[in-house]
Length: 226
Image (cartoon, rainbow, N blue to C red):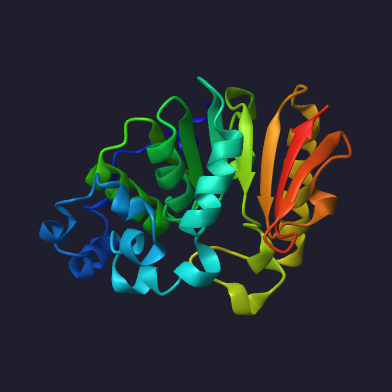
């Protein structure tokens, strides 16, 4: 794997300029019951793992607890490696990983701040089957992963009002580039590869994938490659 895509210990990031973001994080004393299933039942409870400005982004940008549980149940095959493309602050991986300890969940995120908060949340609840990677998806070795979760991470490139921040470049060209990259990657995967898309465009899924479930007003779709 390219060294630029190596998994980075969160403590290295805490010495960087964005360390100040940690100051408005919830007091750890409020998370004494972190491993209680109650944390994974409602978004409000789970989102308390994050500081206020991250919680404010949750309704639009982070996978809800209910969606994460449903998608995780479909993707969680024994000993499989599931990749969340554009994992943000790690909510999907952490929720799915809690309910499916026999599956390993990975998330790749290009924003260093979001990656850091994902790592902090993972360490807070101590899930050994969840890992996060800081880097660009085009530099990742996709052969290392079996199944995929895709919550339309490229949409901000074509809809400026949906941007999280200005930390990364966005453009129509990047939307096309990333969409083609994921399409080609998925097309090369073997039969029985599982994919979950949420608010994704059907055109980003190769024709070899069969739609097996369509729920949440047709926004949550589950696919298996034939």
